[in-house]
Length: 193
Image (cartoon, rainbow, N blue to C red):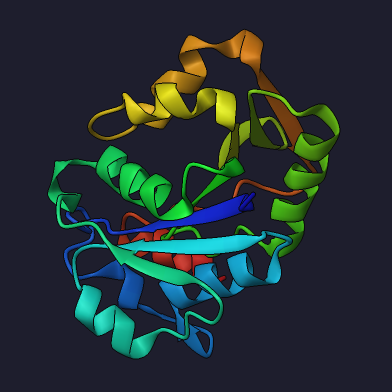
């Protein structure tokens, strides 16, 4: 069994930002590099990083460490296509899939591990992170959710799935503010702070 697989969704178009935000400087690496570093420091059995726009540049500038890197050539159709590419790379035998956003470098390894600890204890259909009452990533999905995940299309599809089955989703509380999702230059400044 492949165990728990972390999937970093880093194939975004950066349409609101303009330039490939995954390549923005972040400390001694890039924004995507920090997300991958956090994922690799977590207690995942495996890590998969999905790239799309700027894949060649990212492969040359990010230290992916133990992560497997895959390309999503359909990244322009929405985030669900990256999820599917990540699921394919994770394999059918993984017991849980954990989704992280490539533009959310503030989701630290200890946040991920806290959610994984809860999921391992409960084996819920899904766990979502609640940062002082505000929902955010990582999301954990058990194998029982994979068929529903494979049926998703477009952007924000995972959120719609979580909203559709609130009775199946366990919230895991984290005592920290919601890490910013970097969509604008202002978000980037906030993430750097």
